[in-house]
Image (tube, rainbow, N blue to C red; front, top):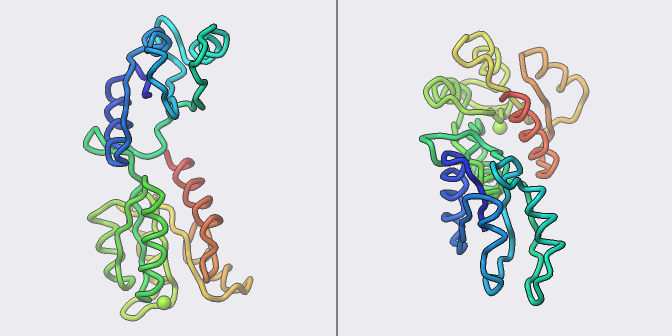
Length: 215
Ligand SMILES: [Mg+2]
């Protein structure tokens, strides 16, 4: 069940939920949610906390205290926009992955996109990465360092010296874990440094932190 009074917010989340092929029941406010028939057994409630008439906290309290036999208490979580709204409907973090190794591209792009709220664009070298960064304005750039045509250090320097792209956070990805490698990447202008093979959860946490700080 999706409980939200904000139309724009609601459309964003609804669009995402529909993409997951879940059955979505809606309520415009807390009272409507509490009055839903007991027969409608939701698996989860997505709940806006600040709503007129009855907010999310009151809904949770009311649901738990209400004497309604047979009615389960599904887990409730707060609706929170985790990605940027684009075209008024979607919640997506747009990542530009600049990488020349096809296996790395395949694996990391798939893992990131399985998260559901991440879109991955790919550039096969630094030069192409600079072009795509300027035209697509990604939220985050993942930058391999050793690449043909233009390497990641040079691409990072160019992106950070271009007013149109310098605010986009860059995570440098290197096969070398040496402190000197990290220093070199940060000196070129990278915001973060991580090593390959990718430790996915760690990289994802870095992506989410940079994205949150950017907003
Ligand atoms: Mg490479």
